[in-house]
Amino acid sequence: MSRRFAAVDLGASSGRVMLAELTDGLEGMKLTEAHRFPNGPVRVAGRLYWDVLGLYREILTGLRAAGPVSSIGVDSWAVDYGLLDETGALLGNPVHYRDDRTRGVAERVAGEVGAEALYDVSGLQVLPFNTIYQLLTDRLDQAATMLLIPDLLGYWLTGELGAEVTNASTTGLLDVRSRQWASPLIERLGLPSGIFPPLRQPGEAIGGLRREVAAEIGWSAPVRAVGSHDTASAVAAVPATGPAFAYISCGTWSLAGVELPGPVLTPESRAANFTNEAGIDGTVRYLRNVMGLWLLQECLRAWPGSDLGDLLKAAAGERPFAAVVNPDEPVFLPPGDMPARIAGECRRTGQRPPATPAAYVRCVLESLALGHRLAVRQAMELSGRDVEVVHLVGGGSRNELLCRLTADACGLPVVAGPAEATTFGNVLVQARAAGLVSDLAEMRSLVAAAEPLRRYEPSGDVGAWDEAASRVF
Ligand code: ADP
Ligand code: LRH
Image (cartoon, rainbow, N blue to C red; front, side, top):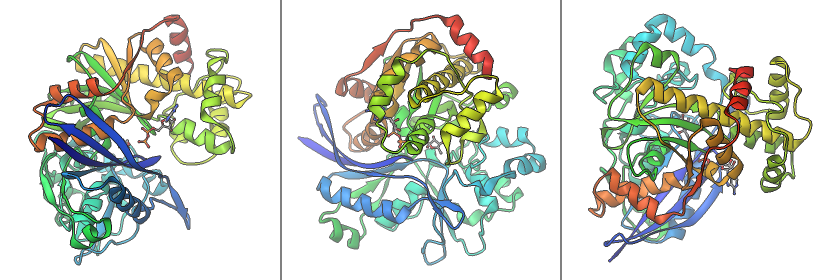
């Protein structure tokens, strides 16, 4: 018998509704794209938002196109949220994590609570936009409930309130040890503890579609919690065959690190700004955010009419190491003229800025490879985990030059794919709840069997990477 599942996966650059077909014998898993739609920041009156209602409408279009399924799972980027009033109505449009409303808040909170104490509770890396800092700038007087984006969409689809735990772990307000809301910290910060809904686990049933939703799409099915943080789903679907692997979930962001059985909360780990996010089955995603293909996306936006494929071909022929930047400079975080900011960073570090779009693309990809190398090396050192192979998943795995540069920079083989790892992770958690799959290892072997993967052996001059790194780190 074959079973169909729908995965709603919202990335920061695009959203998709994917249809997966699995057979009981598990000899094959077929993914098809029912609907894909663009996503991105919308600036309104000086503030950056997500178009959350537009995304909801696209989800309904996608579900209608997908046709009836056994269950639906929703994942999205982390951190951002909507607030509901006591009637369940949305209070204001969710703000985009690239908005500057949290400027200075992380520093203020560290001053008040202590950076060590915060890390000891949440194990989270400090990113200026973590939910904890956003909430402290928000108007909460009317708020009855805070819902992270997939939970908000789940509420609109089913009417049920809850907070899925992998995504809740990106708020800065979840206890990294107990995986419960960190009530003493929430109280200490003066946040209203009642707005944090009960936690739910990946695989748990959320509820059936609201009658009006079922009428609109033409069928009904239960919605099930998955690893609703897109990175949790992506890492669950890394097609690793043993424990000695690092991963880079590479899309708008590159999330680079290792999977561990428990958190690393040492002072060295905090100093390196490594995060301990909650994964499927009690695992820990020990990683750091690298700025990712956002750098390239924003360059392309600055060059109307440019073609990514043509630029990547041209970049492959550009002179190596002409210029590199630290991809994680905070100046790159907001939207805006990316080539100008890259040129500024090159000048600041005593390098001549790239002269052509192809040279900029080369600079971006070598800089990202340097960021990948640093994060993978530090993840190994700080966790003590042995790494023999780096799995690169997400849209970035389609970028052959980036995969090759990452293998060279890390001095490790890179196995690229699947590009839709997040969807696989989302679907496989649903399939497991339906009794079709057993554990993480079996999920991973199913992904490896379902997708052609490419392997890049490291080559080139390691000394040249060391020299390039010394210019910017
Ligand atoms: P997100 O989930 O954050 O929106 P994705 O995982 O979908 O991101 O990855 C999107 C990125 O993948 C694009 O910005 C682009 O750089 C890269 N990408 C997608 N398709 C290709 C392709 N055919 N060749 C090279 N790069 C690609
Ligand atoms: C990737 C991601 C990442 C978060 C960022 C906000 O899409 O979820 O794991 O840090 O978005």
